[in-house]
Image (cartoon, rainbow, N blue to C red; front, side):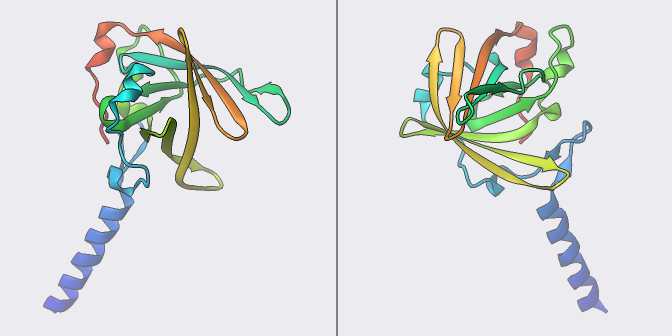
Amino acid sequence: MVKKISFLLIIVTLFVGCSGHRTEYGRKRFDYNRFSTKPNINNTIYKIIDTTKLYRLISKDYDALNKQLDKAYSLHLKFYNNGRVGQFFSYNENDLTSLDPKRARMGIYNYSNNILHIEYYLETPQGNGLVDYEFIIEKNKDTLKLVDKEYHFNYKEVALKKEFLIYKPDW
């Protein structure tokens, strides 16, 4: 009897430990050690990105077709110290909770050899999992360009009010 209870307890612990949890906004969370990308320790990236700013996607260009895609939807990146990045799908400058990291898709970034690695946890109808991107990063005044093999993502810096800088990522 004790063996059965111990076995069940171990199985339940493993299941709960591997599956993670969800925030009150429905976003999946688990330990960042599950990412293959290790959190950033290279301070050179902070000469390119600013962790006190938000980056709003202004265009996504598909290189092979030389055309703009997906300009209509709202997507913002918020870089945090220690290699965390959040993808936000709605931001309201009058709503402090709109940048609560618990609302974001969790991600990890690392900058090495002039390449920015970003890894996100994606949930889609086709399945869930970690997706890793490798970008060449270009900065021109207040525009950040992330270029991979097929896409050019152009982000515009958005200044944040001091009140929005209270948040720390929950991953």
